[in-house]
Image (cartoon, rainbow, N blue to C red; front, top):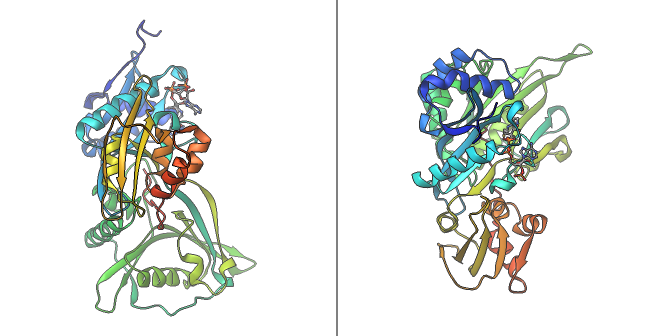
Length: 412
Ligand SMILES: CC(C)(COP(=O)(O)OP(=O)(O)OC[C@H]1O[C@@H](n2cnc3c(N)ncnc32)[C@H](O)[C@@H]1OP(=O)(O)O)[C@@H](O)C(=O)NCCC(=O)NCCS
């Protein structure tokens, strides 16, 4: 039975972790060893970021982690990464997710996190909470037998030993990489050991694979590819499939050489890399561009602006402009946030204003456009908007867009 006021939404205590995990894994249709997960991951989790809905038992879950998002212009904005969102089948559609996410958004604002990010299991869920698709992602499938490469690799590639030194190396390379890529996020330190199978977590089959490291002419590591393989034979011919879990290159030479290395692996017919950007340069490395195909193109990282003026002021804009935007807030009853954005390539200013608005858009449309890759025009037309000055939507669309497309390879 529900209590008259409905389930309580509050932070989870450490001694409630097991039932919280039980609800989470049941709703995600998984049956891992939750006692082990609690023992392995509990010490890494910040319990002020673990939310639950309680109705005599745990009936809803939501967890976040502290990260930074790289935004146009190169700033790293403190952000909250939302995951583990579930509501028990017996308690759905009664507003529990809405209550948990509102509680976390308030807490994030108090912590000074201007942005919330997540991956969505289903596309219709999160727009109503202010999230829009900020990064489009895809999977690349390369048929290695039907193409060559247009240039010779520079530097050298070695297969690293899987040890603590490698963990430190990939952590460092990834961290340098995410600082130069709009849409990438800071990963948690403990995840790198899990990535190479040195730290086992009962949630996932331990990774067993290889890490190829590229070094430049001076011997300095500047990229790596982390991959596994499925052995495959067809008609007595080797046709193995290499699956790339991480591909991190700090420069074009490392990018070219690592792809070349993977494509040249003996016994391999196919390379598949997921959570990549459809805009990356990969096809242009090949003598036959049809040998590589993007598929699974769709929403990657979703972005919500929890503090609109702070988030808009944190990025730069390729075009100068002066625009007053009325943002229809996602949370019911919270009204609108009217901001004046003075944009420019070298910096920007954004503050709450009482001036007349040029344009009214919904929070999720602005979240989608924020990283510069999703046209504000598309998101606003889909969601509804008001133009108070003719041409304001086109102006805003041009101001928000960037030449470089955002990408995010980190899944959580
Ligand atoms: C998605 C989930 C957490 C929603 O929880 P919930 O408590 O039912 O959500 P709420 O009742 O707070 O819903 C708020 C709004 O979102 C809508 N909504 C929620 N889930 C939706 C879905 N999957 N598709 C479409 N709309 C959805 C509700 O209809 C409601 O709309 P309204 O405000 O216009 O009435 C729950 O269905 C679930 O656990 N699903 C399985 C696990 C999962 O997919 N989790 C998300 C991981 S990213």
